Every structure is written in C-alpha cells, then in structure tokens.
Amino acid sequence: MTPDITKITSQQFHDWIVSIVNGDIFTSRERLIALLAEGATHEALEDEFREFFNGYYVLALELEEYEESILGIIKGSGAFAHLKHRVSAVEAQRKSSPLGREARRMGLSLHDDPVPGIKVGELPSNEFRRLMQTLGNWQIFVSRERLVKLMETKESIEIVDRLRAEFYEFFVCYLELELFLENYDYDPDDGLELRPEFIEELEREEEYIRSGGKMYTLEEVAEELGIELKCMN
Image 1 (tube, one colour):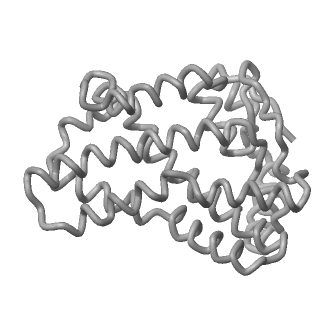
Image 2: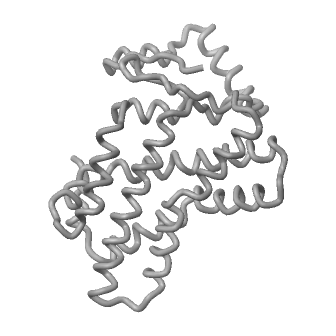
Image 3: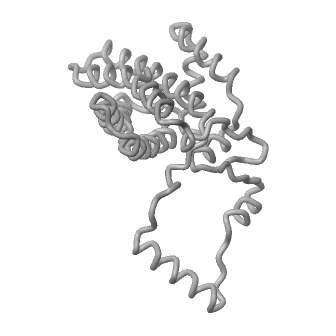
C-alpha cells in the first residue's frame, strides 16, 4: 500500500524530513561545488559525481514511495497552484515509466522505455564540468536550505504549515531533477575495480555452481516478474 503522508503526525513528519535533508546527496553536493570552485581535475569530478549520483539514488528511493500521496495534496489544494503547474510540466515531458526510472538509476533500461540519449562517460571534459555546475546549482538545494532553517525555528502551527509547504516545493524540485537526469545514461558502478572480498565471494559462488548449486540471472528474475531488460551501455 502506498504510504499516505497526510496520516503522518507533525513529529513523525519532522523526523522523516531530518533523514531527508541529511542525505548523502547534500554533503556530496557541497564537495562537488568546492571541487568546481578550485578547478579540480576531470577525474576528481568524476569520482565525486559517482557519490552524488548514489546519493540521488537513495533520495529517489525514499521519495518516490510517497509520490502519489504528495501529488494528491498538491493537485487537490488551490494553495499549491504554482506547484501544480510545475508538476503538470514534468508529467507532460516524462518519457519513462516508474520502473524505467528505477532501472535507469542502476544503469539499465526497460525494453519499452526510451534509452537516454546522453552518455555521461563520453562527455568532453568541458561539457561534463557544465553538467556538474548545472546539478550543483539545482533548485532542490536552495529548497533544502529553507527546510533546514524552518526545522531550526521554534515550532508553532504556522511553522509546521510552512514546513510542509516547503517540503512540497522540495519534492517538486526533486521531480524536476529526476526529469532532467532522464536524458542521461550513467552507471555509477562502471569502471570501478572489484574489491578482493567481492572477488572471493564470486569464486565461492562459482564453486557453488560447479558443485550443482542453482543461481538465477538478472534476465531470469526479470522474466519471472514480467519485465524485459536491455543494457544501456
């Protein structure tokens, strides 16, 4: 069942927001901005973007669970007409399905979803740097700072209402970021070296198969779930 954010108490909502605004994407963004300011190398920016993207992935997992509930609030209240317009723009431009967006974050693509046209790993250094600047200055980070300030303010009915309103703004900023990244093909695990302990685990699994054990491929799992996968790289 999709969680209903309207049934969360003010304290539960506050505690949940704390975990959101302290996500890894926000600390990574600060490092990314610092690297850009000091003219860091392409390799340094690539390494930090991997951390940024992983933080975005975690944020998306947390927020998408509440999407239906939050959009119901935004669309059902005249007070959020300005946000409703932005949501409509996102929904009109989306090309991927919810499962397709989840697959994209893992460097995969569903068969019926379009493949992103821009491969991040093939961008020239100057274009990659511009992409980092665009992401680092995304409106979601401004909204996050406003959320933090509201959370540090003495609680009152007015503050609780403003906090919720700002969070809906934050959520729409997240939808716009998600839409922007829909055009980019990126696998955060691409090019990473395998750790020795992971290699040992693979060797144990290989021995398990040789001795008669059964493992399931990603394709078999996808077939069981009725999902057709295709590689984006």
